[in-house]
Length: 261
Image: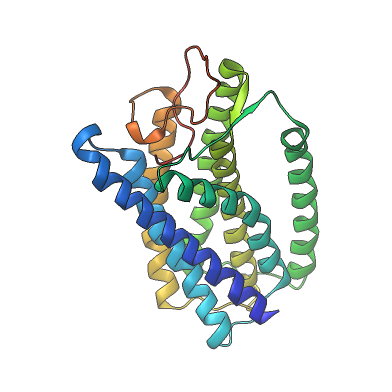
């Protein structure tokens, strides 16, 4: 279990850092033509805080004696399909490809997402009850992780509202937007599991993780502001990629697929 948790977090950390590097390259390449991108900068800040968090956690599980847990492994693995799909789309875009797909209508796999999400939440809740039955102690050092649970959930909320609005306008979905939208609730659940294990004494909260956690909070707040502003139409940002993938003929559309272009 310890090896699996460490490997999963190492992989997740490297993927986030890769996200950030590609986003930096995009901004450097496009800024002279399209100008500044709040979405791109916010995403870079998030990638370079989420990535180190997973790398730090993986290092402490692998070499620092931190005990890996099944809920931790499950929380990471649940986020893999959406995160990997989005990562592959970003590689395609980085290499000059489409970087997105338009999903017409609402296919079965999209309709199944709420059901699968509810099933996972029920399973996670049962696991939390089992782990926490001996009592929990939410110490002050867990504050940034507690805040990140709410912030990542809020990001997911605004991005999901955007996808629903786009669905009404376009009659379909952006695959890139959907996958990135799903990433953030899974991030929130990863932090919830981390808080749980730390509160029962299975995980320690040392200085490296604490520093990364507090750096993550303003990055997440900035990202919330960006996605909320884009959803409300408070400003336009070239790096929101409009609605991402579109049918060949499309009418007016809302901003933000969640895809740094």
